[in-house]
Length: 158
Image (cartoon, rainbow, N blue to C red; front, top):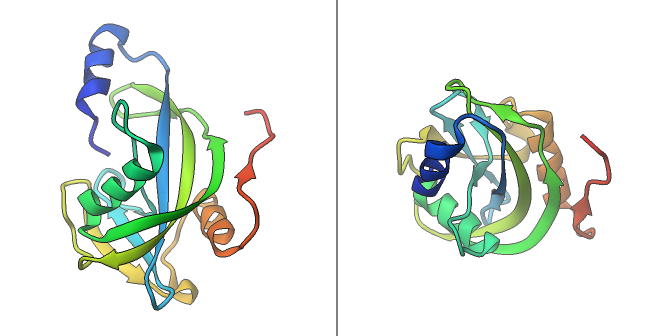
């Protein structure tokens, strides 16, 4: 994930210390029920589209923007799927972050899926019965996005 300029500015004075940041994840389905995934350039893993809202940006707007920036797919955010604080991440350069992630179920409305920036190696639509290996947390987000239940909130301490 590319580091936003406002995070670089904070890092200039904060160093590698833990930053508590907002994050968004998008679970995007097309009209055929396929799931949009990206293969990340930083670790080579297939993943849901995610990112960091810009200062003042609404989370749903950020989720839609991130999908378009990374995949050229236009989508609309339909509902919040879950809200949770993720485990602390330590990046290769030593920076530490912990994200409060808001996950949205989104519906594709236009564009053609392709690599649209340097954050992804591949972009693709996948039938739910033929997903590439994904992390447990991403599989949980997909499961929650497929239900009509209420938004899921974690009540577990890290």
